[in-house]
Amino acid sequence: MPPTFHICYIGDARNIHIHRWAHFFVERGHQVSIITDEGAKVPGADVYDIGDCMAPVHVPVLSALSQILKKSLMMKKLVRQLQPDIVHGHYATNYGFLAAATGFQPLIQTVHGSDVLVDAAGSSTQRWFVRRALKKAVLITAVTEQMKDRVIDMGIPADRIMLHQYGVDTTVFTPAEDPAVKQPYRIVSTRMLEWKYNVQHLVRAAPGIRDRVPEAEIILAGDGPDQDELATMIDDLQVGDAVSMIGRVQHDAVPALLQSATIYVSTSVTDGTSLSLLEAMAAGAFPIVSDIPGNREWITDGENGFLVAVNDIDTLVDRVARVFEQPDLRGRVIADNLELVRRQGDYANNMTLMETTYYHILHQDSTA
Image (tube, rainbow, N blue to C red; front, top):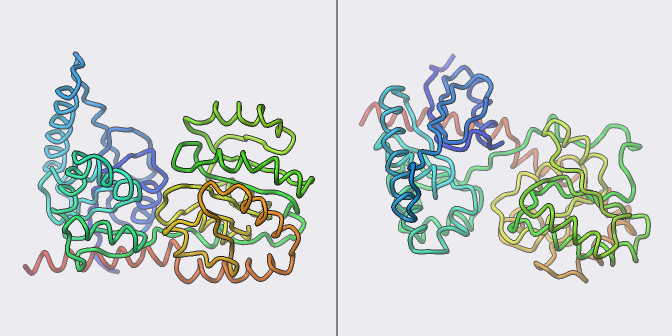
């Protein structure tokens, strides 16, 4: 059996991605520590919550700088005490920066999407934080070519960047064995209710979808800061009979929800590789998603799903109606998408590749 090692993740312990990375390596027998400022239980891992480190008196800018400094010092001290073999930061803008500030090597960083696609493209301050986090890493993982290109644009050599999908569990996310499970007119969105996922666009399309397909039911399975705005919009558009907000669904209940869906819709304005999309593809829902770079790496318009321009209501309505009108198209796409996700987006395969990468880095470090 290969030797085990100690990984220290620095990230949001509430985040599903952190949970899934930790779970895999715990199951493989490795020691996993997580340093965070957002405490949560992560089975099998040791979680160290340093809190928000806010100053007792809030002074704009100075308080933020004080908070960053305190977190950096606390994390550096913790890493020194834990003595891990690898430190791995998740999300460059904040946790990645703090991981780099520990000074530990080997340091790996994973960019998640908005850190390099939104934050680093915004203010010069945020770009500085992201670039600072990435410069010190021996390896950076990204899930799309677009994200890789953005990292290169910040002066990081291409040979230090690895395209790596987190992946989904294709033993769990798979089409239902019983065809009766699928609801023939059900549309599901499992995105969070916040600006970048643009769920408002789907709600705006609801009147047109209902006109074309009166039986259609739209289920919004998510929560977030836009929840009240969306509820008001549903009332104002008088589509409460067609749109249901069921809140965030526990992750172990998501496969059954997606298996019941005929169509999966994501109207996001920015994304890396969306795990929600891969889950829907593997579970047998027909994907209709925004025409943005991250989605183009998985969906070829008209072949294994539909791509719709951001905020194009008429085309979204038309594509939804076409899917309901063309059952033969749905059957072919379901089989093709399951095979695609199993080949390129399988969680066990992709995380095993990451384990091999960890071994390689540690071997290089020990012989340097």
